[in-house]
Every structure is written in structure tokens, then in C-alpha cells.
Length: 87
Image (cartoon, rainbow, N blue to C red):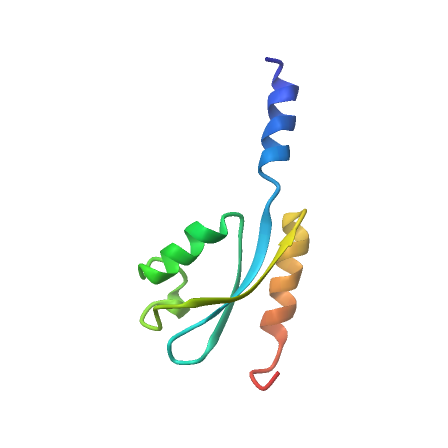
């Protein structure tokens, strides 16, 4: 198979980019980016995710949004992290 076709197939099959929000057991929220939502939540619950969620688990998925590009998902994460705690 041609290298260009392999790359096209890879990008067509791997274009899932997610922004997600977790609720920690202490009631706080954590927002992040991933390209594999199930795996990432599993890592958070195993204590191998973000430093913030370690010791605050188990976590629950509260919200997620799928994007076509990584940049769009990262922008959503950035906007979330700029919000005040009250919002």
C-alpha cells in the first residue's frame, strides 16, 4: 500500500479529539484533552492521570465534547481552565 494512502487511513481513523470535564470525589472539577476518552478516564481512576486528580478519585465523567481537530479541543480546554471557580 502506498505511504500516502496509509497516512490518509491513519488520520481518518484517528481524528477523535475530546475535551472532557471530570467531577472528583471532593466535588471539584478537572478539564482536559485526550484522543482516547475511555483510556484517559481509566488512567485518572488508577491514579496515573493528571496530578490534580490523584488522591481525588474516583472521578466521574461529567461532560465531553468531540472535535475534528486537536487545536479546537485544546481551545475548549483553555477556555474552561480560564473560567472562575464560581462559573
